[in-house]
Length: 332
Image (cartoon, rainbow, N blue to C red; front, side, top):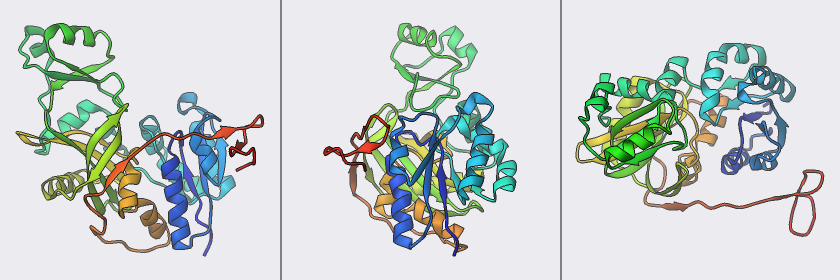
């Protein structure tokens, strides 16, 4: 069988994800390379891939062309986006990229991306399809002061909890609104927060679904989490996935409040904490290799529950030639 080469875009700090793909290939006996790209040579994940390449910034106007060229040169089988800002661009150019390269682009339909990337669109979609979301305050309600504090403010197209704030009174809210570009104001949700990793095949069939209790976060990304098979959450997320029909690894965030399950957002890509679910047994990387080999997968819950994950930082050293070295000065 020919090599299966995977291209991980905007690799950044996603060392865990790179290693998960490499480990899955080794376990399955798949030959090929994991190739990582980023616009910065100091992106740590580059140095854990089998190969790496530098690309222009996503907003440069040359990003799609650069990705397409790398796919041809490296004989890429699968392209894996990892950050929000590239999703719409890639979804709009999916047919072109796939036709020119023969690679599969792991991305949902543009209509799905537009629902997920714009928080107002997410709010409307959830309301229209009968899913609970916190109340969104209208301009009229904000203007006449008809507000129940605390509230939560975030940008319409925000990511990684950047410019997301809780306001406990009108004075705080007014100050926050001067800081946040294109803000939306919602009721603050009080309850345990969960992230659900869902993996769907290229036909939007659910293969795995793993709820994780968010025990601690840092900069919007999970730092400590526990796998929990919460059937109430799983059934509600199943209904959401069957309505939305995304593709690939999807990350859903919600809270269990006194109103039930209220949704925060949907990220149609690998989330930063995805390796937790992968390590617990719901291996999306392994599943992708199997799909690329032509296997038909079915839904399963063959993963461990009540296991806890603690994430931490590490570092690597690059020498004067930007080559990784260990503490003894030997090239890695």
